[in-house]
Amino acid sequence: MDKRAPSDVFLSSTVTAADYRAFKRAKDKEGIADFVYQRFQERYLKPFESKEHKHGFAMMACGCLMVEALQSFWTGSAKSGLSGPAFSNFFDRVERFACLREHSRHFYKHVRCGIMHQGETTGGWRIRRDASQLFDSEHLVVDATLFLSALEKSLRDYCDLLRASDWDSEVWSRLLMKMRFVCEGTLVAKEG
Image (cartoon, rainbow, N blue to C red; front, side, top):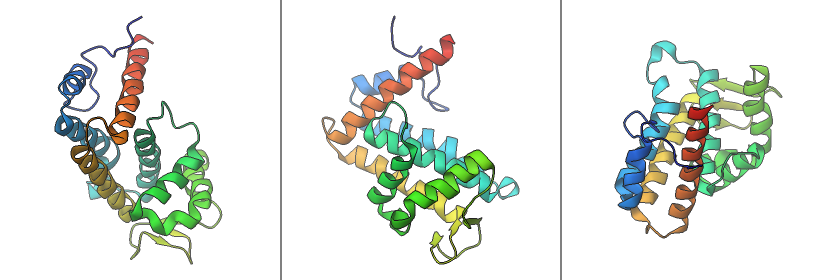
């Protein structure tokens, strides 16, 4: 069986599987970095640009999904699988989230799992959109707006690193491995 995604499958709003394969053949770092930015931005960040529909819980749910997805792109993982360690590794690796490093296990349990499984935060953690800092460790408050803003900046940093790195670098090797899994997954989804 051919494990390539059908050419007409859109991996983002403007990039098809065929486009991605053409970028890869040409070793078009700029094209791939732009595609990665577009894919994450439109799926996880853009829905919250409208103030009319903004809600901190929905923002944090998408933010948590984006942390796991970005981490899987960073590591080249087929799927997140170990979500708890993904948060620890992401917060340890990304300086913009240094304030959550010591709290990553509790963030995962009380914010990510609380929102995803219970529809609420647990353990006294709170989500706000009007705090003055991304994380208030004394009151266990995460500002959803600042969290998404830090994620967007981290996404830009990652795409800038892709642009600046050699095609044969580890960061590109992991991204290409992850994209292989993404393309294989779109094939299964389309056939299913």
